[in-house]
Image (cartoon, rainbow, N blue to C red; front, top):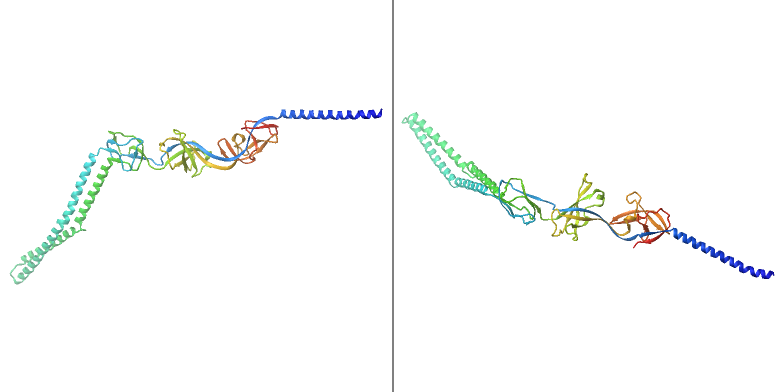
Amino acid sequence: MMETTGLDSAPVARSRRLRHLAVALAVGVAAASLLAFRSEKVDVVLARQGELRQSVVASGRVRTPQRIEVAAQITGRVLDVAVREGDAIRAGQPLIRIDEREWAAAAAQARAAVVQAEARLRQLRELGLPVAEQALRQAEANALQARRQHQRVGELVARGFYSQAQLDDARRAQEVADSQVRSARLQLDSQQANGSEVELARSALEQARAALAVAEARLAYATLRAPVAGTVLTRSVEPGDTVQPGRALLTLAPAGDTELTVQIDEKNLALLRLGQRAMASADAYPHERFAAQVDYIAPSVDALRGSVEVRLRVPEPPAYLRHEMTVSIDIEAARSAQAVIVPADAVRDAGAAQPWVLAVREGRTWRQPVRIGLRGPGQVEVLEGVAPGDAVLPAAVDLPEGRSVRARVQP
């Protein structure tokens, strides 16, 4: 009986152990099922490594570095306007013609005055000098004769043949002759090349020539010419108009570098520097892009708009660009070739002192502080806190730290 009982108890114990193991397995499966049921399924994105470009995007306008206003310098009636808006012009090309008859007559009168002054100076050189020389010789001869006569009369008076009155007459005649010599000599000196008469004639000639230059300049003002090569931007005059000095009639854009001007929000000022490259496109030609370069950053900020003026030089402007055309400008501020990149909406409190991301590690959410670098379109560079391949949750997913989750990578 005792052997029979011992043989029967072994199968019973084994059966009990199997039942306990089955129960334990069932409990484990149930616990795992419960844990899996309680874990939330979420979409995550993986941090990746690649190139990231940060840029400043704004809208601006095309302008020329300089604009020249063409205005009349005389009053008159416009006879002809040879150009219109958009015309390409060359330096010296006639643009506007004003009635010139009055100024042509003044120039002719001044020209005649020059001829007269030249003739007067030539007369002094060709006639005045020889006549003065002859007059001096004649006066000197008369003076010599008067001295001899005075000497003879003196001798005759001494002998008693002539009276004292006759000697006085001879002395006066000699004095008159000497005076005529001095006068003739002064006249001859004035006719010399540096004499007063010649200097006066030369001065009159210079004045006449200056008056002619003024008259010819005013006559030239009747035809307004292009000061430089370029393009006509605006025209505000028509044939028949009476123009006044100083009134702008045409606006010209000199040929040269094209410039883009744009107002950048002052919060982006730290990202800008001279020489930065940019790509631009005209709103009228959105699929055509051309290169530009930052050439000027205003030293002050517009307080009303909170912006800073930036100008960009266009080395090779496309032919379709027009003055005041609206353009979109993308200025490259920085570039990183091997950046750790996450979507911008995955970084929380990005504008605060300590931004962070909600990462997924070992099936649970984890608040991870990060240090961010460049910011691209919809992307952010993470300098510290995240490595390539780490899973992070978009900001739209609001879960507490430590929550058990089942991650599903977004494509």
